[in-house]
Every structure is written in C-alpha cells, then in structure tokens.
Length: 396
Image 1 (cartoon, rainbow, N blue to C red):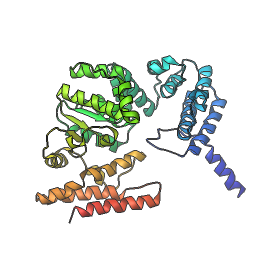
Image 2: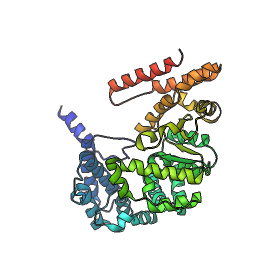
Image 3: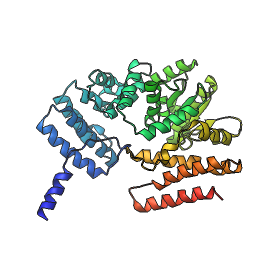
Image 4: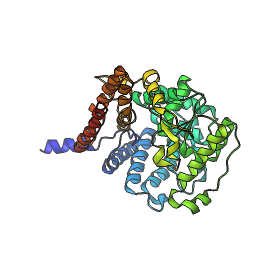
C-alpha cells in the first residue's frame, strides 16, 4: 500500500505539456498540480523557457477556470508569474509569448500587441506548433497584411498542430464555397485551419476567411475593407450598449457583417454556430451541407448540399474502421457535426432514387455515431441513442 501511494504521488506531480483546453481540457485541480510541478522545474533551472511557458499556462488556466483573476487581475497568480518572468527572463521569447495571452493592466505596450512582434522576432526553431499557431492568429488580427502571417500559418501546418480530420473538415468547407466568397466563423480556432490550407497549400485563396471576434479590431477591419475594395465602416460601440445592453455585441457584429456582404456583393457563408452568436436574420441563412449560406431569396439548398456530398466533400475517412484519433476532444465533436448537418440528406437521396448515396451517407454517419464518446458514460449512451434514432428515422 505504501508503495502504491508513493507511485501515485510521483505520477500526480509529473510535469506535462500544457495544451490548449480546446485540444485537451482538465479539471482546475489538475492545472493546479501541474503549476506546482512546473514551478519545481523553474526552480531547478530559472533559465528554462519551456518550464516557464508551462508554468504560466497551467497557472493561467487554473485562474481562468476558478475565477482567480477576480476584479483585479493584477493581483492574481497569473500576474505574479508574469512579474517573476519579467525579472528572470526580460526580453525573452517566453515572456512576450505569455504577455500575448495575459498582461498587467498597466502594460499598455502589451495591450497594443507589441509583444507579439517581439515573440516572433525571438521565435526559437523548436517552438511548438500550438504556440506558432497562436502567434499566427494574433498577428493576423492586429496586422493582417504582414508577410509573417502566411509564414507562421505555414509553419504551424507543417508541424501538424490541428488533427488531420479537423483539417479535412475545413478543407471540405473551403472547397464547397463559391469563388470570391466571404466566410465568417466564431474565433480563430475555427478559422485557423482554413488559413493554414490557404497559406501552406495555396488552395482557395480567393475565399476571405473572417473570424467574427476580429471585427472589433480597427487594424483588421481597415485591411479587410481594403481587400474587399469598400469604404471602412465606423460604428459607435456605446450606442449599441445603450440600446441592447449585454447583447450589444451580437447586434454590433451582425451590422458589420451585413455591411460587408452588401457592399462587397460577394457570396457569403457562415460556420454552423453563427445563428446562436449573432442577431442575423435566420430566415436568410440556408444549410448547404457543412456550411451555411446567406441568401436574401429562398432557393433549393438541398440540391446544393447533395451535390457537395456527392462531388465535393471527401467523407470516406470518417468511415475508416481503424481510424486512429490524433486526438482532440473538439475534433470528436466535429465528427458528430457531420451527423447533425448531413443526416436529413439520407432521406433526400432516397426520395431522389439515389440509393447508393443514401446508403453511403448512412454508413459514414453511422460510423461517426459508433465512435461517439464522452467523459461521462451516461452522456455517451444518451448521445449515441439520440443520433442512432436520428439516422434510423431517415430510412423510414
């Protein structure tokens, strides 16, 4: 028993790379234990930038998930790590990288994003893929015309930051859009894979990929309007706050999006979560398979979606019996998105007399359901039952 306890203690204190919670999330206690483990590594070698990087990330996530920043984030544990890092490793890569995620309220240079340029300047050859992707996204936001945006996204692609099936999902969406399209999605976690495909592979560079959160950044908006050859838009945020209260951003972003659509006159697509995140007119948004398209006039979107399934999308990888998850929690959710978005096309194919495509799609989506997992076994069974019934209903 004593040996077992000792082994568990050692294992609990073993330092592990702190990944984005989008890739692999943990309970706050895990991050707290990791912060302690990485603090020991820092104490052993204060010049170890990798140890500082993980100490900062573990502390930051713990504070974030427990409300540790409070009303005064400068008094948080995360802020304390930043101060210690400044004293130990001034002008270092890891300090500037960390300030991109969290900075003191008194640090005006970091709030402007100056540290992003410094982190890129000090970028080591062995920098991990996640951090390269992060710098690419931050530079894309504050300085979208900078040549290093493409270089960084290409570097993150070569290091395989995103799992293969997330990249395939993104490529399917890109290939299904009309020439010169606009594509809006929530945040850079969704849009970064598309930028990697455009920059590293040179595919579909005619599509303008737009993270909705970037619409609040003046430099990004100016560059975007320049690319679209339209006049910059000026809106008063305070007016939206006075009129809409806590939901002001939904209306603010929707008005910007509609301005860009109408002025550029380009075909426009959205990620599937757009309806819950904005105040856009839902009656003007149609499902074309894996993307939603804006159209002020009704049209037969099911024909387009079926064409995409038959001729555009590569879906066979979802049905591979020995598919190895190169594992992100969120990439497993993407598999289930295919079921939600495409299931109703099974009955459409059957009614059109295309039994082959109906059976093919049923087989592919059934495999997604078979692999459906959750940290909660009861939730897994409930989800599987729901999706299995959804698919079976298409065969009736």
